[in-house]
Length: 366
Image (tube, rainbow, N blue to C red; front, side):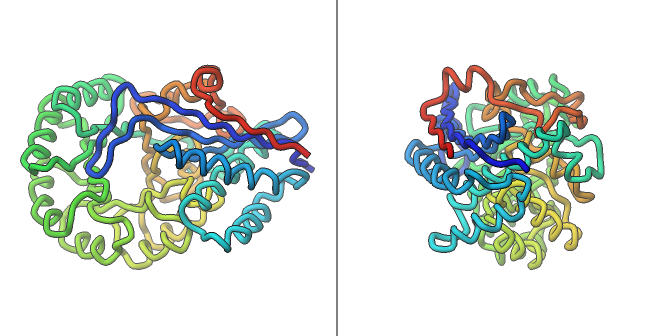
C-alpha cells in the first residue's frame, strides 16, 4: 500500500523575457502551481498553469485544501481518490479552478505510482505507440521579424510543424505574417493557425479560403470555445480542420463538443480534463467519434496519454512556458519524441525553478 504521508504545494513564477500577446489577451509570465504527493520517500508531481498572481494564489489555496484530504489515503486507488475529490467539488462546481486542481492531484498520483514501480506512466497506461510527433507552438503577435526568427529557430531544431497566432486588427497583416514565415521556412515546414477564440463566424468564413490558399489545414479555436453550434457551422463550411477542446472542462463539456460533431480534431488540456484519468475518458469518447486527438500544453504529462490511445496524434510543446522548468527540457529528434524508460512522467522540477522562481511553498503532513 502506498500510504500518502506528505503533500507539498509549490507556486513557481516563471517570467517571460517579454509579454506574449494573442488575439484576446497578454501574458507577462507563467504561474505553475505544482503539488508533490509523497509516500514513504517516493514522490510524484502534478501541475496547473495560470497567468495571474491572484489566480495562482487561489489555485495554491485550493490545492492545499485537497492535500489535507489526501493524507493517510492509499495512493494506489487513483480512481477512487479522483471520484471522491470530484464528489467533494459538487458544492462549488466541476469546471474551472476545481477541475484543474483535481487534474494536478491526479497527475501526481499517476507519477507517484509509476515511480514506486520504477516504470514510466506510458507503460502503466498500455501504450499503442512508442513515438509521437511534437510541434513547436508560439508565433505570438509580436513583430514580423521576431515571428520569422522564432519559426526559423524551431525549424533548425528539427521541428516540422509550427503553430502561430492569428488575430491582428487588420486581417491583411495575418496573411502577410503567414507568407513571411512560408518564404523563410519553405514548403516542408507546416504552419498551423491558432485564433484563440478571437474571431466571429463571418470573419472565419471570409478568412478560411485565404488560409487554404496558403496551405493552412489546422484551424484552431476560431470562435468562443463553448459555442458548439458556431464551431459546427464553421466546420461544415470550410475546407480546413477545425480544432478545439483545450478550454473545456471534464467529460461533460468535451462530450458535447465531440458527440455534436463540432470539430475535425480535438486538443484536450490534461489539466482541465481532470488529469490523466480525465484525459483518458475524453480521448476514448473522441475515439468512438473517430476524431483524432492532439494535446494542449503540459507536454511531459500529455505524452503518455497520447501514446496510449490509437487516435493520439500530435504533442504541443510551448517552449517559452516550459524552458528551464524541469530538470531537463523535453528532447526531440527531428520533431519526434521517443518513449523512454524514465520512471513516472520522466521529469522533475529544476533547481532553478525551486530556488529562483518558487514564491510559495506549503507542506501538509499527517
